[in-house]
Image 1 (tube, rainbow, N blue to C red):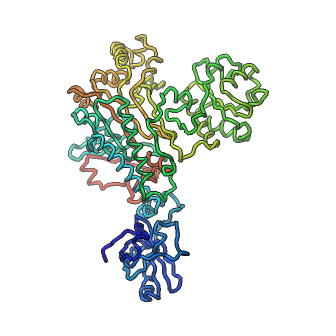
Image 2 (cartoon, helix red, strand yellow):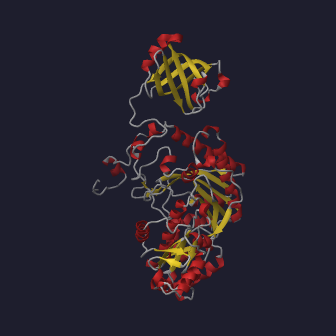
Image 3 (cartoon, rainbow, N blue to C red):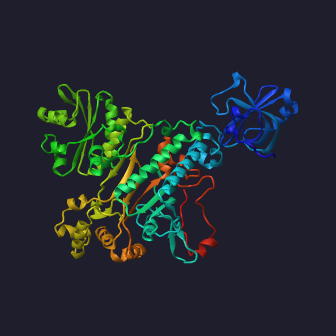
Length: 630
């Protein structure tokens, strides 16, 4: 085999007359009788090899050895294609190689899936044959984009003085919101490591160690239920810095996002792809900021899609308290939520059956129903309009700012979460029907001022809305509440605080120093200013019901470190996979990972997870219960 001089996709008119050697896979072979064309492919692109009987008949005969997906090497001279044979579909479309010699480096069986850009086949078949799937141009371009994304992030952070520090993969179980993957220890039988859900505690320890600015392209592991935007193992751009304000972290990460988008838009290797990021304009900073309360009020979700910014929700609870329709009135009187969506000009856009389907969907999310009303010049029309007097109709129309021809969708329920879920979904559906969800438009906003705690009614328990290491905005008031809880005798912190005169509304009104970056309704990054004092950390542990003993067992190393002079610090993390999926306009995270797991969490290519031999289980002191295989 002769030394390769060029990659296939690199050849241009400037190379005409040069003798070159290229290597790659046979993509297409066409025999025109006396002339044979082979389109040769490698990661850089494709180039046409031309064999003619006039030039070398023996060589033409030899091409019979080359078949689809064979690996070959070819040497020849770069020539200009005839005018009628040029193509703008290939970057090399103006040239070809007149082959003087070639060699079959390896044969290939017929692959289970086709190597073609527009492949349509069972996703699991693609995963099982991933090494073939990755030969396709969209997959190789995706990996090039992924490398460009990570490279841009690295360069930006290193220019800002961040140090790349690896943190352990064999970790310890911590309460971070998802199930851990557990690894048994042979040396310490009956004890286990956990794979990290994030490097959260270690990056805080880096700050306590005085390292000032840390970053890592970090592998993370979560044993979660599967969704299109989840994988059991994923990658984060993770960073932490000492002595920052919230603005410092946010402004820094804006630089990272802009650098990433610029890198993809300017990468010559990617210009043949039809991706949203390549069609979008340049990002402008600073990004917009929105507080959590506004997001929930106007969009019923803390990650609003602002491409449809003007499609806002309307809170009708105050109107409902005095209205004549008992279903709405009763909900409002029980401190429930009544919320509606004005669908502009869509009064006739849904059939009766389609409106019933919307109501069925709402009921599937826990709602008791979904009211629909049409706005006409005379007032409201629809199933419940007869229960609403004219004056109340006018007040409702005014609250919506509605016009004749509009459709109004309304949901009422005692549980606010159900109303928010229903109305968010309705808003997404209507935005799509109105053509307000252009994937090439990136509407980016920071969401800030999140609640410090969330409340679970069934067991009267608080839990941290972000994570328990997030600094409260009002640490002094949290301390006062924690002191009341410590002195109480009731079984739960909430009960002790309520008995001590603290109202639940005040507890839930506490805010933290969390910030999430949202693009097109997708959270692409999230972080917070952290707790750097043990007394503040102990106060939050008290309110979420983590005892001193439990805190010492789970976080003793962190509490000890905080006692040794921890600086104020904060950081942020962004999921590489989810960010890339958004920028490329894909809808499954598996399509931006080289070797992902299937929907059931299996690696179909290497067939894992799998059973291990009994001798190894015995060495680990593990007994496996009888499992019914499906």
